[in-house]
Length: 233
Image 1 (cartoon, rainbow, N blue to C red):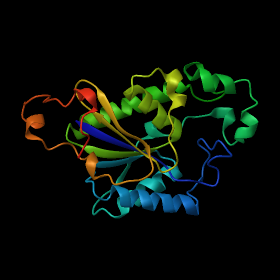
Image 2: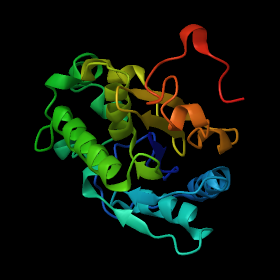
Image 3: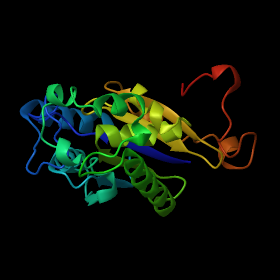
C-alpha cells in the first residue's frame, strides 16, 4: 500500500495574478518560505522513503525545506512532475487570459486543451501518472514518499485516483503548500486527504493491523469500509 504525499509548492510573487508556468527564476516569497517550513513541521512525524520534486525552483525550495530536518535526506528531481508547459500563456496575467477564447475550454473541457506553443493537459496527466506508477514500483508497497509539484499536475493525479475523467479535474483544488495523500492498493487508490492545510500527519502511516498485513480479512487493504468506518483512530 504505497502512500503518495503530494505537496504543492509555497507561494511566490507570481502565484495568483500570473500564470508562471516554466518561467525561470520564480522563487518562494517570504510567505511561501514560511509555508514550506510549516509543511516540513507537519511532515516531521513521518519517515519518508523519498522526497521527489519538480525541477522548478519554487518546488525545489519547498522540497528542500522538508528535507532540511532529515538526516541524510536528499531531494530527487523528476521532470515529469514539472508544471504544465503553457506555451504562449506563460507569464501572462490570469485576468488577461480569462478573456482568451481558449479559457472556457480550459474550464469546461480540459481534455481537449493544447496550449498554443505548449502542452496538452492530457499529456501532463499521462507523464505525471507514469512517474507515480514508476516511483510506486521502485519504492515498494510499504513506502511513504513526498512529491512536490504544481496545482494542475496534482489535480490531474487526484482526478485519476478518484476515477474522474480529466474534464472533471477543475472540481479539485490544490492550494499553495497544501498536502494531498493517496494510498495505492492492488485494487484501487484511496484519497486520504485532499488540499489539506492543517492538522497532524501521523495518521498517514500505513496501518500496522496484523490482519491487514498477514492475509486476514481485507488483507490487501483495497476494500472500502462499508458505512464509512471509524477512520484512523
